[in-house]
Every structure is written in structure tokens, then in C-alpha cells.
Image: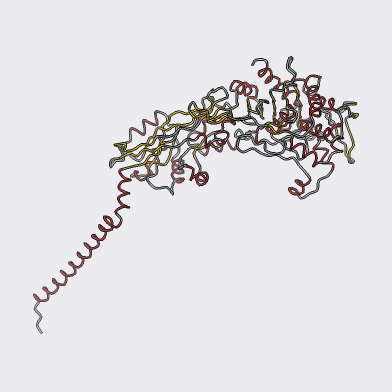
Length: 602
């Protein structure tokens, strides 16, 4: 059968044409559906994306509230600094962008990459903070490449400024970039990634007061991302200012006296409970943290064996040593186990529970009454008193005086310490309390640990004859020229008889003014009352004691707790010198210099 090739070719062409037509119909139908989806069904969604490409909301940080001393001297303020941000969606080559940023801020690219990784879950349009506090050279480098590297943005932002360097560092604390954990906790409080937040000290304690409220700017950008017009603006609201109880000249004086020592010093105004000076040393420069803190710098601070970031005043836990004898004396008097005339014969050693306990003076003090035992810090007197007392009774008086528990001072991170009881030991150590342990507690040893702020509260309570003040640092909150809040002094009355305080104070007065252990604190014309405490790090029974104490790390901690004047007291001063040696040789004379500054040169 003959097949016409022309008919076959025509038939194939018709079929191909139909297929092509069908394909075109399908293609145009698909395109029509896509356009319909974009223009009609998802019009609002894509319209919003388009507007985001044109418009952008920029949060403007609020300046933090100022921090001043009691006489309005500036302790922490603000300055304007350039900050650098990287917007990933604007980058043509992210690797090249990271290398350029590293060159600008003199860091390895890996450090910038780590910053980017920290924000990997954020939208590509989110400005990732790369560096704050840029210098002029860095700003010029970025600005000169703005046409070719639109992914980089410069912003002028308020930055925390500490004009006095390390002064009152542990009181003020520092601010730094908010962490992911903090952001999760505070996301409903107006915080966003990249924000700065108080991390320690009063910056953290009063963060809600100091932080202020961010502003907002709605801007129009061109296709290069350059801002062309400000569409809408909402002004930021600066944080409120706070004024402290600190006295700046006194603070600087105490810091200068303590600059080569390790430990803590604090001065309290007994009329209000306000802290006039507070030093924890070694310290740090809060400005270190105001930018983006690099891991290496953070590690150098946290790994420093001297622990400069630890506020020893509220977090340092130490045995109180002989300072604790003040609590024992009050408890013994109130429980009627002793009177001011009760005397013992100190021979240097006493045997209790088949064990020899020693006085610090190996040959003893002879016959001593209560005031003489306090004057000379006689261990034997308080060993024998401790033998007659129950540990739970001792603990009750110590806690009433503020030892072993948080004082509630307005600083974050306060430690509680330990004031042991039978229940405490059984609960914590699954062990009963043994009578011999009470003997060690009676001179401030054993399980007892306290913080310097607790000792300051205790000595303030004794000075005020049982009126326990609430120690504090905030004096008032202000908004511009308006006073929003002023602290009202608060006191708690202890149920201990006035005459018992007077008997203990007599011993403290004699310790300073009657050739006692604190005689180095004596200042003519000022009736200072005080108690030393030399807390051994290693036992004197150690056969290598004389050799080991030549090394600083084995020297005793030195305490001196005091107030002045004896009647109508105005100030309390507590000194703790870590590994300082004998308290009467280092802590007491330092306190004397503070009292001269307070009461002679005021």
C-alpha cells in the first residue's frame, strides 16, 4: 500500500502543533495562576515584603539614666559613639564582608563569624551588631566603602560612660550586650537582640529605672538601601537618674588607702543606714564591657586568680574570727550566763572535752572580766562561755544581728554565708552536731562564714544599741528636675536589753583606747569603739606554721569592725584584708585613717 509522505508529514506537524499549543496553554495558565496568587490571593503578604524593602523601622536606643553620688557628682553618664552593623541580605559575598569587618576592627575573621553565628536564627535583614565604640579611623574606613559594601551600616548610639574609671566599680557594676538567655526571659519587657543591659552592681539592680524607653524611626530607602526620607519618628525616653548615698571624695580616699590590698572596706552612715563608701579590691574598669566584649578579654578577667569581678563586700564568705566574740558576749549576757563582772583565769590553754584549746597569747591573759576579754580578745574566756551555750541559741543571736543571712542591701548577687545549727548540719552533712564544734564557733571558727556586709550590719546594730539599720545605696530617683522617690531609713529593733549593749561597747572602747588589740585604731579626739579579728588560714598547731605564714596565701585574714563616736554614733567602718596578717597591725590603722578623714577633715 502506498503512503503519501506529504500526508504523513502534515499529520505530524498538526500533532506537534497541538502539543506546542497545549504546552503554551499550560505555561500561560501557570503564569496566570502565579500572577493571580501574587496579585490577588497573597497581595497583602507580598505588598508587605515590598514595603519592607522600601520602608524600614529603626529602633533608637534610649540613653541610660545618670548615676550620681549624694551631692550630685557624676559617677556614670552617657556619650555618643559609632556602632557598626552588618545586614546579611545586602551582602553579595558574606565571606568578603566578614574579612573586611575583621580588617576594620582589628579582629580575626573567626571572631566576626562567631558574631554572625550567634544571630543565625534572625532574619537576613536584621542588622547584626559587629562593634560598638568605633574610633574615627574605623568610621572612615566603613564610610569610604558605603557604595560598594551596602551591607555595612553605621549608627550613632548612646553609650555608657564611666568618667572616673575604676572608681566604685563594684557599686556601679557594668552594662553589656544582652545574652540569648536574658532575651528569652525579658522579651516581654521591650528588649531586643543587640540591646545593652545592666549585668552587675547598681546597673543591674536598678535596670528598670535606668534603661529608659526606645524610640522608633520609619525611613524610606532606595534600591541601594540608602535612606532617602524620614517618614515617621517616635522619640526615645531617657532612663531616670539615681542618686546614691555614696560620698565620692570619701570613696576615692578609701580606694587610695586600699589600692595595694585585697579585700573590702565599707563605711555606713548610722543615722540612715546609707553606705558612704564601699570598696572591693581588686576591681575593674566598667568601660571594658560597654562595647562588644570579646571572649579572650572575658576569659582573662574570669580566669584572673585575684577575681577582680567578685564583689567581696557582698559575696566574699569568710570566717569572722574574733569579731564573733561580740555576738557571744551579747548572747551570754542576755541569757544570764555571765555578767560584766564574770571573770576567768586565762593561762593560755584550757582543756575541754579531752582536747586542749589555746589562746592566741600562749602565756595567757591572767584574770579577766568581760570587758577585759573583749579588750584583749581572750580566746579562753569565750571557749568557756561557748561550753555553757547551745549552738542553736548562739545561732539565734547571730542571725538576729545579721550574720549568716542576706542583709537585703540593694546590690544583686548577695551571698548568705553560714550560721550553723543542729538542723543545718544534719540536713546539709547528714551528721549530728558535736559539743566540741560549739567551742570553735564561740571564737568565730568552725562552720561559721559571713560576708563583710553582714559584719557591717552587725556592728551598726551594736552601735545603735539594738536598732538594726537596713543598709542601702540608693538615696533618690529623679526625672530631670523632679524627685520621684527618696529612701526613708528603716530600722529593726532587737529584743536585747540596752545595758547589755553598753557592757559590750565598754569592751570595744577599751580595745581601741586602753592598749587593747585594736589600739592602732586610736585617734585622739575621737571615741572609736572596735573589735579586731585575725582568722587563721592554717592552724598554729601545724609544725610548719612559722615557715608557711611567710607565704602570703597562708597569712590570716584581718578584720576590724568599729563605730564612732561612742555616744550618739554617726559612722560604722568595717575593714577586711585578705591574707593581711595581724588585724591590729593592718586593718585597725586603716580604719583610723578613715575616721580621721570622716570626723576631723569633714
